[in-house]
Image 1: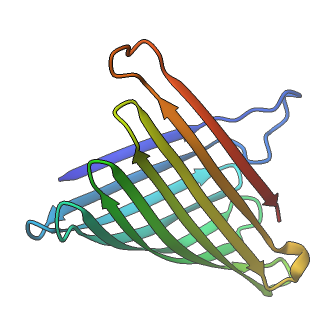
Image 2: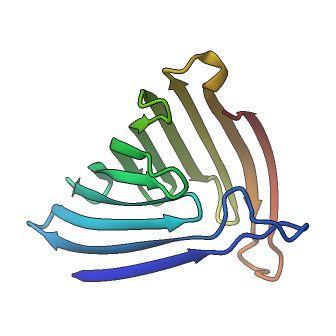
Image 3: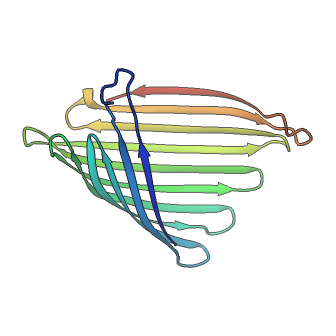
Length: 200
């Protein structure tokens, strides 16, 4: 299968000045092919443009589904982004692995991602940023009308410019969803979210 996607994000501020993130879009063109009953591969070209950054990255990955319950995947993302104001280039290298399990009552997924950004500075030096991201989510159906759900995401980012430029976040969610089988007009969700953010 061959596919093309384009997503445009248009942000604005209340005082009519340009947003810090600004307007931006992502164009993704790719191809996906099955190598067999349990294996598929994909190759993508991702073009990103915004008021602050433009560039092209190349992504590829492979997914395995050994049986109807388990799945495993690996992907990479390599490319160069350019600051639209200064012209400074950022060389990006990223990789990730995913693991998933699904049954009638339980769905679980976990992923680890690593990204290295090597950025030019105005003084002709280089700044390196390493980021780790851990993602976990689950759903468990405890009855015909009730389901538990949750997720735990954690990220840490370190910069060669010092600890003041480091960042990270932790997000934990636990909830209960209720939808009676005999009365589908009722939908209830009780959820607790913990979020801790250290912006760089």
